[in-house]
Length: 256
Image (cartoon, rainbow, N blue to C red):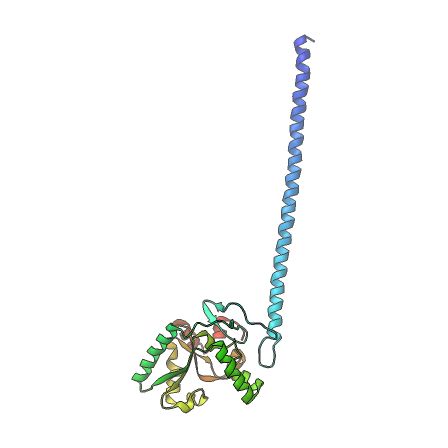
């Protein structure tokens, strides 16, 4: 072997060893990446399982809330929320969806304008309508509900009066409507037998109002029939509810 070849030999061996080390290093990185990918998948699976469990817990909670109610139809031990509930952009107030105690929007300007249109149309047909009760604050509902309980008992009061925080009047969108000259039928279902009451039941939806607690729907709304209590929801929704002889709960597919 020549001197040049002898010097070249260890250099080739060192080069080969470097290539071998590089190959082995690449294999090692592949294993590390594989481990990292597996760890990522495991973490993702755990997260998915946790989310699924959370969803199941939520559904079970909702199911329990559906069946855990007191004699008045209210969810047992339910606390008033910090924010009002909107479903499909509609403000909801019911025995299932209460309002915050400090929720105080006042009477809705939009609902008032719609009522004035309704009132003008009724006048053309010979009826003078009055919105004798609209927005009521939480504190006012405390007084009213207490009076009803003292007079009729809690069980009876719960069929026609909302507990504080659960009243639709607190939304500013509920209008109790009667006829001027027939005040004896204010907040009385005798209103339904009058010509004005019949006209209102037939035409209110044209102006965006629905009879909130119609006859035969007590198990759905949670309250007795009130022929004078109307809720502003807008013309399209009101017309849909009216034509289908349904309620706000049925329209939104929510429980009472």
